[in-house]
Length: 173
Length: 387
Image 1: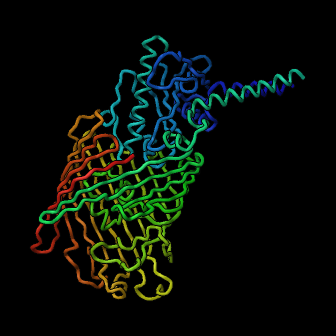
Image 2: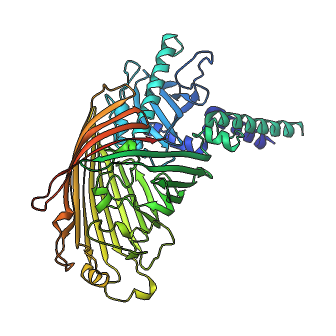
Image 3: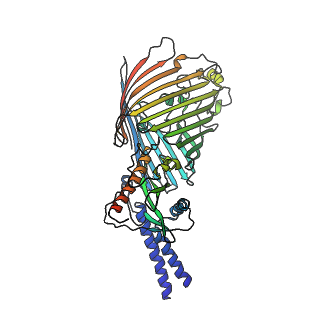
């Protein structure tokens, strides 16, 4: 009986904590572990008011606080963006001051534009913060043969930064 | 007992809330949609994808009548059975009246780095054979290296693996393909167009010996993308003649390509070299003039005249091309035809009026190395779309 209760509890905890699928969560965990160099961390949704219009989606399952014990290490943003005919999943990891520490394309689902997953290309976003305006082709380099996805990822990161700026402005972050 | 019911209900409510959450994250994944909605909502993780590309051209040679042509109109139709299994096909109308299937393959996504793929696929060689949508290259017409040396759109039925390693910014493709036909209906391989006549395009194609094709793409240097391609095998002969000398030829093709883009400047170039063995016997058997080497390259530079950050793009470009389908003829035991050693300048504009729609205009100077050959000029105007 006790076992079953615990089982139920674990079930709830697992899903409520991050609403990400297993596969996605594993990939996110890996990036966070290597970015913050911690083995143990918690990842809890940072709930922001639903009433504010933001350029990016900021629901339960997109924006997370990363903590080690009670120390805030930083934030993670997980979402989808369009590629040519499909969508890809991406992750942006911020430090506690909301400066981008790393970004990763978690799942890419088509041929065209898969090059945006390049570690080398994604490095361009490191160090960017709400004071930066990302412009495709100007301060974010293009990739031949991946124009659509490069634009899409650039827009996605730009919109997340803009959203954070709005939230900071309203003292919600 | 009450506790048991409670814990079960907790589990169930947990599952339900979990489902609601995952529905939120994937937006379209679990929603009921009919086919039309699926099409309209092209970005779903499952279901039907439609797309296409088209190019309509006007070619006006100097001192001759021009041609106007709906050169290509291609419908892309894809279906995603799951995140792992996808079918992709392209149905092509060429010059309005010719219908082809340009691609038709089933893809199985094994993991992040590996896809297994089989069916009618593009042979990865050079830039344009794979990236042939009109908004991705400058010039109304495709470069001639990608017509006479790489016979684009070059596709055959085969099976292989493809994927990428993003840690090292490397993409790879490796396939076993059916090869060119030695004789394709009435057509044989020859001097002017090299291997082009031999494309079987997956239409009741004859196979006697499989061919190998591979390409590596490296994109680890900002703005630069490099490609290295190889193709090895023999042409395919029909049963009744396959043991006769000259029934087939050996084909080895190597390609190197580079694309660079930095702010408003972009450039690309490629070098393709094909070696044909046993062309002497083939030429004797079929009374034709296939060279023993085919070779070509081009270099192109472009500059966007509009500021960055606006939706439109206006590229002014210039390209120089050399291609020779008789780069070597001694081993083929035929006379070298210098008219097949061609070169051309192309200069013009690609006005991208929206992402995916381009209006193009260029002027070409077409020449060859025959003594006293007069350079021919040609004006090309057209538009291209890709969606």
